[in-house]
Length: 419
Image (cartoon, rainbow, N blue to C red):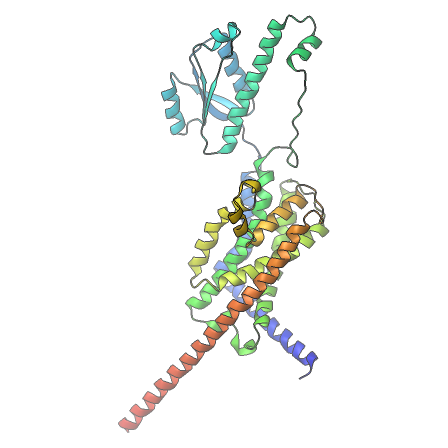
């Protein structure tokens, strides 16, 4: 057989696997949901939730033991800020804590009894801030508002006792250095702009693994080995099976990844600085690595529900290990080694640097190299696990044929005895 004829036969077998896998995707409601519906709807849900970027009018309770003009001024200035709303007053700290425990308010401003007395004596006074740490955004709003108001009141008191004659003298004495805070790569300082890009890339990997694993689990539950591995056409080559299945999911996720990486950030006005060519260079190895990773994981799944439990369980872990929700420098070295096994780690880091920080392909060359290494690694792993599956499929077919022969032989003997 000529090389050209072998190549045509190889392509014909791979195309057959591609067609069969595509049919399974669109016939199975669960696979269709994870591969198409979830990637289309989940990013919209996340983006709408975090579209405001920051929280405003966080309710707080005030315990004013001072009941002075200065304490009332502090309360009015906090209530006038855009981030905090004074919802109610409490008699003592215990009553205020009960309001926080019932989630009526998110924090407490405690003004001691000697607040105004110490300030009038030119002594330092304190205001205690108690916050519900369940949500860091509310803690940030409550704490920074109190810090800003106390700073402004301190400047006003310092000006009143400075004895200066001009506004310029007041400015120099109270603020000799002007500080301008600029947030790099996130001008709004919003939670959505920092987290949503990572979520978009993680959705690609997780939904791929869920869809492929569910399709494989369905085939095993129904004992349809020919659905998982079409032995009638290409039993002799694992590469044809892997290429055929990967072509099916690459075709679907070429559209899904374009929607997630290009369309969604522009729909919700998130930062999108990367040119389309750079995103294409990134998404090619990332999609390949995710597809081969999913094909490897699916052979370890024996029931449809198992893959859902597994991938949902590790989703939050992978988000932390990517270095977005938790600083990469603070992650222990062994956990960083574990994170290198997942394509999402390098995909998230490269995508954020390209699209949110304006990096070039040279700046993410390490991440691209690691993604290509994972492509080779998981392709080899997929070939190995599918070779094992093919062996099990052959043994299952032989055992079933042998059982049918035995049944047939028993029936023939019974007919002879009856005759």
